[in-house]
View 1: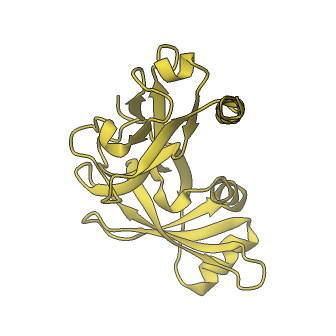
View 2: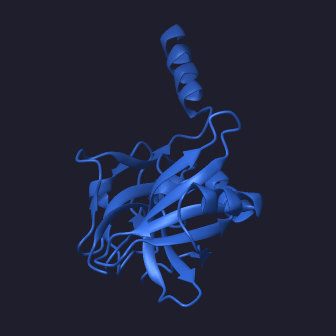
View 3: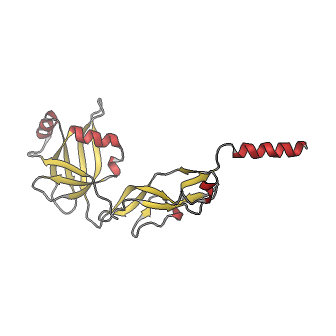
Length: 205
């Protein structure tokens, strides 16, 4: 299932240059530019509070948005730069790049873990530890997976699950080349200590 893109609503900015940008900021807007995609650059304004909220949420530079501007067709965009005030560290300008449906882009995709209820290691008291709740993948802009799934139904205590244990959607690949860890099943607290105690008692006898 393809992931639904979050909307980013902006307005077309009339006029360019420093004067128009200053006026936008006085009105509680952050000026920006949308470029690329074989189309002319489009000057836009985004409400300051909306942009600040999205920046604070994180992953802004690696999130694909559905940009909605009145009078324009919706377009997929990704942020390519945020300029900030050197004193207040607040956004003063933002650049977006248009993407075609066939464009490749690196995005963070959530990991869903399934099979916990039947995994032998979990039944014995083990705990699943998620090392990477999200994985950065190179995906196609027109077909972004909503999630990737890690099946641990046969997992034992001590098992480690790498990215190679996940069947990735066609056309996607991890940004990191190595076979990195996504999750593992750890022993319940106290098991190691109990085993040590038993060994000590046996040696004393």
